Length: 235
Length: 235
Image (tube, rainbow over all chains, first blue to last red; front, side):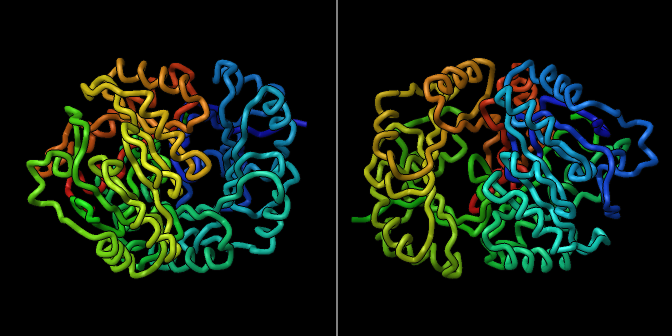
């Protein structure tokens, strides 16, 4: 069995969500069942880019992660695309045998048995601005697949007031899931510099919304990697 | 019994460390046993500023926090100055009765019984660039005072290579304490704008150091409030 891998890179830090600031190596899976209009990782989503993806055996994937991390255990972040299209069980088994931990981020549209082997599962259902529609029954299957295993958290990207209201409803539906909000990033061209002030302004806007509402459930966080590296890939 | 309070403000988000992004109301205590050369809160440290501090009963402090938060429970952050100079036990008791949580940040130079009543205790021993000297016996007393109570984490500010080496040694001394590193902020004048690019560059520098070293223990985080509000007070 082989895996389609868009890129493996690091060590760097996790730029967002529950593990923000944590040193990590990323495994970015190629392929996605969604086409969010504001996707910041189209190179790992659109199969038109599949000639840039690598077809790798799990042991090859693991060899590269181990080499990048100098054999020192850390948390490996499996992202995408939607990594839940593929079977990352064998990679996780190899890594755990070496003392590594695993986090995975997925929109929650496809459940996989290997979710139960993770340390952290980040479910990031996509709000209305994505122009995708969440299948909550599929989302619930992801929760069931992970039950008794990883810490499960929810992360929602907020572009506008409609997304914000939607996130509140999602939070009410899953009050037991720790919630992380991050402002949407509409500057996704890797060849264009990011407007730092505009990026900070969007964070400011979201903080103001949450605190003005006295909605104290979510943590509000930026994308640190965008602040540090813009939209450059492989960092 | 009264408390010397430099300021109470919020709701805003916690800008740094373990609770980064978490909505919070700050209680900033007046007075400190340290004089770190790069202190960013001298208005709450130097007793020359004590005419700006408020002398308040615990019930008055609590009334203000409850009013700011609209009576909706959240995590209250007790900072300073060094809040461990004073007795925050009564404030914590009032807040817990209303369902609030409490985090406290202190350098770890003075232990207090009320540490055990907290939800999160952030111990931030000061590195050599502060020109203060850590009393590790006192630090250990803080750990003992908190034992069985809050989650205890360590946060260290890094200005230079010497601080970095010192943080590594501190981490080896307390391997069981989750560690958060943040780059030092040398721009502390509340009347001057912060250089966003320079602030991000310092974060970049620290991420590069940690990842180049394959030192995967600490999380590396910026001060979000500095990115969003500069050194403005009361946010």
